[in-house]
Image 1 (tube, one colour):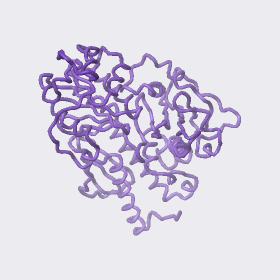
Image 2 (image 1 turned 90 degrees about the vertical axis):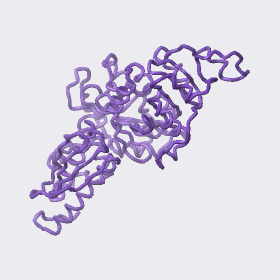
Image 3 (image 1 turned 45 degrees about the horizontal axis):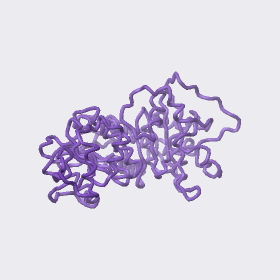
Image 4 (image 1 turned 90 degrees about the horizontal axis):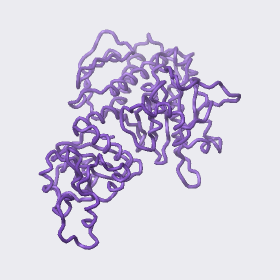
Length: 451
């Protein structure tokens, strides 16, 4: 790599413009609905991202340019703020390295996708504390992501590989002790993927590789056993059943868990929640805690909100679609449902072979009183589950009646379930599960969030 002198003005201007473009790309990648606008210049052009968050608008300053970042009418969440700062740290470190040939020769910050480094800076801020620090620490997160991404291209006996790693944290953990280095310990890096048996030693679901603070794979651990000391702790957000132990494994100690799932998705867990997913060829900040808070607040019933969110996550992991409609006013049910689909209506003569003959099994039932497996089973039936704000089950496996709705081009391409979700959201809160693993919350004809 050529070395530029910071005192060479043409080079400096070229580099500054390039890094301004990198900042804009990074923000648009993770916050595609936000709008970044240049609002002025400052005399000092420091390679540090200055930020001042004020509700839905953030003031940024980078290399002498002042920006206003607008988050489409909603406040920036704690994780969105943290991610913006992480992007700034990565770019500031890369900028400094351009003028430090000795350090850049041994640094891997220019390798791989820049988005991987942004994710790493969010999870492990010590790595990008500056150019000098980067030469002394291992970017374990980026290395682990590369291992999982390469593994995703492989199969075993015609099945997708699943695997994972637990990165030992830097915070106190009274329940776990960092193991000593075993003889011959290997770095958890892409070289491992060339070992034929590597993918068979941990499946990512029950077992993961433990990676120490130097980035060495030092042990294989049972995720459930590791998480057992935190079994009674309340999670900050509901989880899919398959990954509850992964959530709990990161509740204390600052540990980070990365998993390549059987669906080919990369999930990253930290602080007891899933914080990132790599799905459909790109990273997504899940912002799970904030999204669940918004959903819970809208439903107004903590137990009901928790139950439906958990069931929806389990459906998503199984790549099964579904639709849950919570009516604000149960008296409006007949505007969405036919009389034959309403559970509380006694059918005098249900047609032989029709679903109505089974209504008696679920009549007068509350969703919060049904076992979760039973609820998941009926949610898999084609159609929607409709209930009121108290959790009373009004209909299941039903096709909603609705007028044509106005949808965005992206929504229109998603099919009838999205159209039904938009229409039903005028009557209450709607949680949609897509066949490709996405959860979406609709209210008043609009998509509030995707997860």
